[in-house]
Image 1 (cartoon, helix red, strand yellow):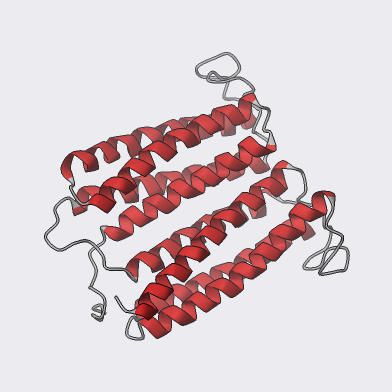
Image 2 (tube, helix red, strand yellow; image 1 turned 45 degrees about the vertical axis):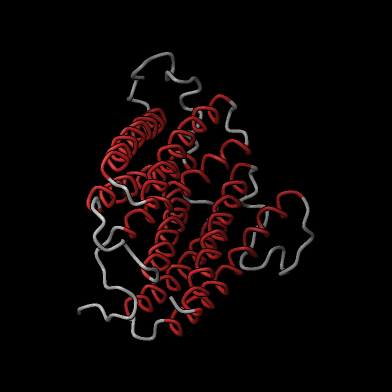
Length: 302
């Protein structure tokens, strides 16, 4: 791997960390009821640098952090293009990522200008998770890939794809719970309204309960596939990723229960969202590492 290629992957990893921090900030904004602290967009009270106090601090910091992400990712795309000029697939991913960020910014503005409509706010979070996956894919595809001759690639890829798909659905479901104010529709844990299966004729209870059920399914699927990887695969990175996914997905589920028990306290809810993003990033990394692809320097078949 050349020095420019290493720089590109390091920059993409920094973009990944920046995106995780942005997701955390977005959760803090909602959990602290700061989403409409700035009633206008893209300015805040007519200024690009308002007084950073109260809810304005969180909301405008979120906006500034998102703006910096666009610049950072654009720089990463340029560096990746210079490191791998023959890899048009990487450049196309970069262009798609920039388009996602533009649409994401517009959705963020729409959430403010239209007073937090549920569908727009949920789409805003879903696109943030989609961008996270894209950054992971770019970074891994610019790397060395699965070691030649190493068995267990299929089991590893299944862990990443199955776990990642379910975590993404679970995260979108969590956004629906958040933006429909269904977070305390089931105020008790681990039961819901004192029952294993609550009365589902109430829409908010149904939304909340579906999120819990899918969360348990995510944990079961990830633990099952992670165990298979650990039993069959000797490749060290794949084993570390499987172990990390298993640990973080259990912690994420427990934080969800704690969030309800703590009446959606900002630290708990924000940590819950962050761990969901971490699990998704781990799953995407696992899937991409085990993806059959050309080695660096080869041009992928059209």
